[in-house]
Image 1: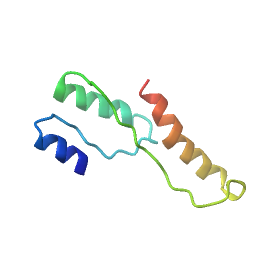
Image 2 (image 1 turned 180 degrees about the horizontal axis):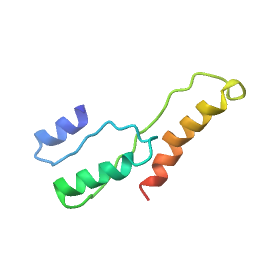
Image 3 (image 1 turned 180 degrees about the vertical axis):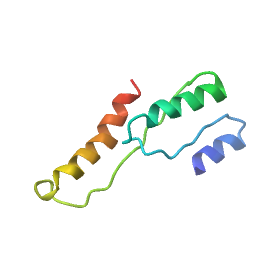
Length: 79
């Protein structure tokens, strides 16, 4: 939000959003809202992440799936 505020102060139109991109349809909804507001998307900073403070071999499969959905799946949804 600080970077978006700094850009806005310079006259740049910016949409900053915190979304659960691991949820189906979250990115599609964000794209629709952004296009409705601006008419197009010129760039995206995808900085999604999920902290998992465990050794990989001790991580439950459900958590592995969630981490991959957020960190990899969401990135591919932009393509």
